[in-house]
Length: 121
Length: 108
Image 1 (tube, rainbow over the protein chains, first blue to last red):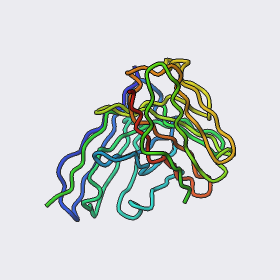
Image 2 (spheres, rainbow over the protein chains, first blue to last red):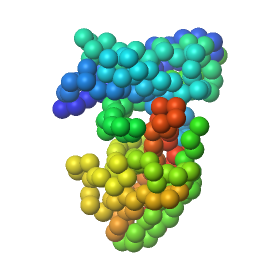
Image 3 (spheres, rainbow over the protein chains, first blue to last red):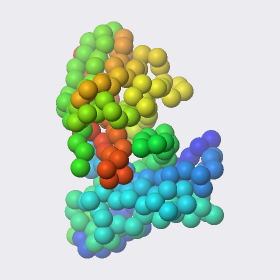
């Protein structure tokens, strides 16, 4: 059974750091593009970052560029998000999502259950 | 950056059809994907590539895309369809993924 399990959420201080992890199982992780998508409580979905299967292509939303770093370890079937310089507006549920990529398009066919990040002093 | 516009809410009576629009500049030339999200749950893909349904999604869910509007149609709406629905595209000018603001479907 395909599973994506996020961890690492919790309380972070403004200006501080947190590292999220996503453990993948039930599929060949190393062949898929992976993403982080977040959702502020009571609000909509916001794409955060994408990393291709070999880590060759990495993209960030403007709201996190320069502060967040996405990475993956295909030997451990794991996806990561290093979040630095945290802001109150980063408070959200962060989802790990597998992406099916085609020519100039991609969609998220499987999602984890999410991990809550709260940024507060 | 590319912007997708959805109405905040749509209401429909049980058994009727619900149509949820997603507006974007020349969106008809893009591939649009749709997600359903129920309270406290992760999003679920219901339509990809404008009109394809993943396995396990009822035939009542369909999609279309032309001009400046993509539409998710849910036929014979049931109480269990009450959820938030999001459209999504890939912005090829930036390689960013873009979501619409979401539409809350209320079954009367």
